[in-house]
Image 1 (tube, rainbow, N blue to C red):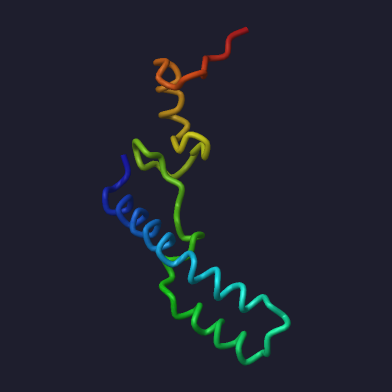
Image 2: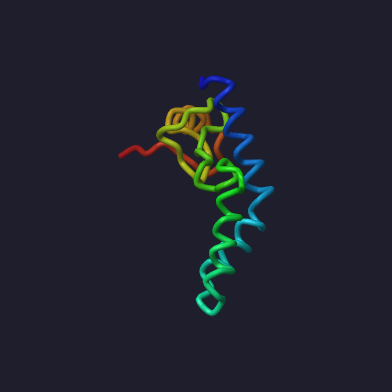
Amino acid sequence: MAKTSSIEKNMHRQRLSKQFAARRQKLKDVIMDATLPMEERFTAQLKLAQLPRNSSRTRVRLRCLLTGRTRGNYRKFKLSRLMLRKLASNGQIPGMVKASW
């Protein structure tokens, strides 16, 4: 099980990224628009830099919902490989069966 503080920190980053997503996208659209003057694009770049770092989507780490493990996660299930195997063996994931040949 991961430390509770690291799980909470990641949840805080998720909340911030949702909160600032629209604002970040507007600023990025202004920055990428080549028809606008350079001064306007540069001011948008400065405003983007003033937003909190943790509001960026890339700062959010994929963690297992059950254990908080950061490595070996399946995005489709949002579970680590260990918990996925455990739940699949117990038959708790619909449609997933253990391979045998």
